[in-house]
Amino acid sequence: MKVTIYTVPECQFSKAEKEYLQAHNVSFEEKNLETNKEFLTEMLALSNNFAGTPVTRFEMDDGQISIIKGYTKDDFDKVLGYSKPQETVVNSTINVPQKTPAPTTPPVTPAPQPTATVTTPPTISPTPTATPPVETPTNKPADDKLNSVLENLQSKADETSVATTPANQPPAATPPAALPSIPDFQDK
Image 1 (cartoon, helix red, strand yellow):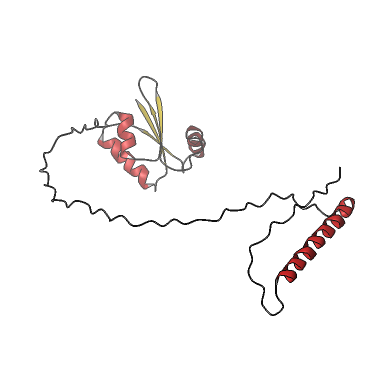
Image 2: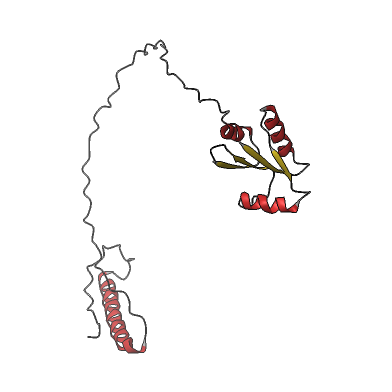
């Protein structure tokens, strides 16, 4: 196995990595980026432009190459095969005494209440209306026809309210009368 470390002198991670490798008797070649700028170009190409240190290249005896950017003990343990096998957790059953449930009282059923029948007047659905036309010079006559129909309806409504209300009494609230249908004045 061949190990190459790209470092700078004041990097604490580089120092920690070198101590780790020495403690595991792994020999390495150190390439100081401050003393040789060609090492920087080499490191950037190797690490896909990673701009930190250390960058470590492991070339295994079988030809496999691993690049580690930065330093973490776990990453080095994995590459060098020092990882501990994962511990397996064995499920165990613990007998926990069950609490005896407190006696419950039967639910109280409310007494039936008398019901009243309410008659709701039928709902009158408004008839769908057409979207008001946009005022343009071509539909001006249709607006005039519509306005005359609306004025005619308003005058009939006013006559009906005056005729049914006595002169000395205020008008009483009366249910709305069915309105006559409005003809559709669309140009054809």
